[in-house]
Image (tube, rainbow, N blue to C red; front, side, top):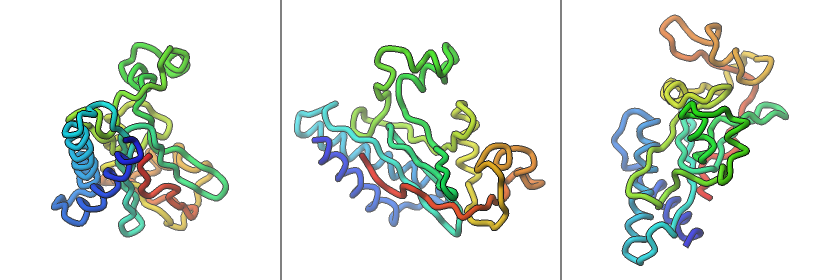
Length: 196
């Protein structure tokens, strides 16, 4: 059922996006993943396969050279600049949850038994909380979500030295109104929409 869950997820996202009414692209992507989750969960329930039909999903939209993302599960989204890949999302695993809770650090969380177990995937529960954040150099989901709502502008022509680091989120990367300024370097989105 995993392959079928992936296909249902893909079809659901592609069907939802053109019909969505949100003016906020991050919220539109999140609602598309909610809708996909409802479809997979409903079908799994009807077939008596609750909890056995699941998949990870990512959605990314580039609108006027601006990147927005949403994810559920453990399929990452990367930014490719030159020969360097920078991971923008985090996996929704037990290790991530342990770090977010503040109980242990990343290194210890990765040594925990079952650290790769997913705490969130499409189709497992009736609801999901899609992640719309960019996680570069941080673990805090609230900060990452704020970054995701502000957007990542692509291909500005301004070169940055190390990809995303301080040039992206530091004070030098913000305009007077707090909106992120463009970064440069000929970025490409490595994964646009690929459920797993």
